[in-house]
Amino acid sequence: MQKVSFLVILALTLNSGFAMYKTENFNRSPQPVADDTELSFVNGTILTLTSNNDKLYLASLNLTAMQLNTSTDPWAVWLREIDPETFIIGENVTTTVSLAPEVQIHRGYAYSVALEMDDIPQLSVYQQSLFGGAPLPRVQLSRNTNRSHIPGVVATIAVDSMVYVFYRSAEKTVSVVGFEIGGGLGAYEFTLTTNYRILSLSVAKGEALSLGTVYAIWLEGLNTDITAKEATINLFDGHFNSSTIASFSDELSPVKAFSTDYEVYGGIFMLRDSDNTKIYFIKSNINSTLTYLTKTTNMFTKLADIHPYGENFVLIWEDVSLEDLTTTLSYEIWKGDASGVIHPKTNFINYDGASSHAEYLMPGKGLYSLVYDKSIYPTKLITNIKVGQVLEGAYMSSLTCLALAALSFILLI
Image 1: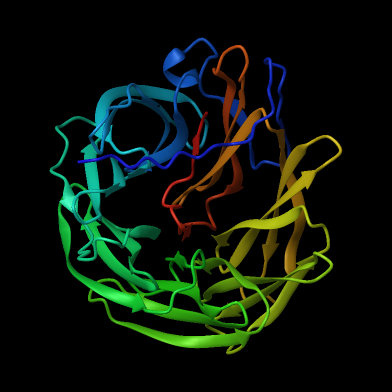
Image 2: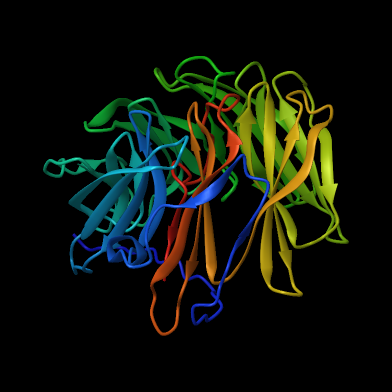
């Protein structure tokens, strides 16, 4: 099999080791979770947070070699247990897995969906337990019969022990197929849309939705005739009800689907005005139309994420400063019916191009943040690794996802 690699090239500021992120307004302040001398963590290719059986882990995955003419490469994996309440360090686990470059983690397994350019291009999934055991057999996900079509992953979402892959099965067609963590292919595949507009799908799960059901938003049509669509999808049997939210003649972008922990679920959309004003709209199951939510006038400010917060939801904002070339993240808590703000925008992280940040929403525990500095010259080591809790978990239990967001991870160059 011929390997197809998707390398993300990040534009980073050269740094000689003097970078420093700043944190504030955390529910539990960030604490050191790895020493700067621990090469297993400071020399990783991917550094992330994950959880398994109510345990929080710092995970370091190091790509040990690039192999030609194969779809997978060997990765060395280090897991460090962290108490989600006290951040006291527990046991370490070390293993080796063989996976494709796009690695995700769920329920103690690392998996990757790979594009394989055989006679007919196909998507396949590779899996391996992080706690011992041989790699599982490769499972082909797509059923492509067109040699000229290259299937591509649009989004993935994990529901209990299953992972569902939304992918382009034809030029404008999005199909859905599932596989079991630690197992094989799901029992069925179904088509969601045949008029998909690229880079516009977002999927969410949560307590406001029934068991096995997710909510999706996406766009259909061309630039001058755009239709915003929504659907509640029963992933157990592939049945769904789709409807049109609105039609627009201007550029409209879905930002994120979401679900609160009680009654409300929906999606947020964004329109960019001629003066670079970004206007955000919300559509939920309790309002029948697209409703104005808020706007930003700074072209370097954007809505980066949305999380459930009990019956309400949290918006994560990203502001980039051209003066000092830093990024500031803030959270803002809204009522579930979008009628107003409960807690105003509150900054919690400021970092530059030589530092990194990744969020992780641990079900039932809270929203956590992994922060660290990156030294690009003369070495590529990372330092000052800390984990903190941004928001407490008493009100937070469901994980939403956009595109490949089953897990937040950072690929270091």
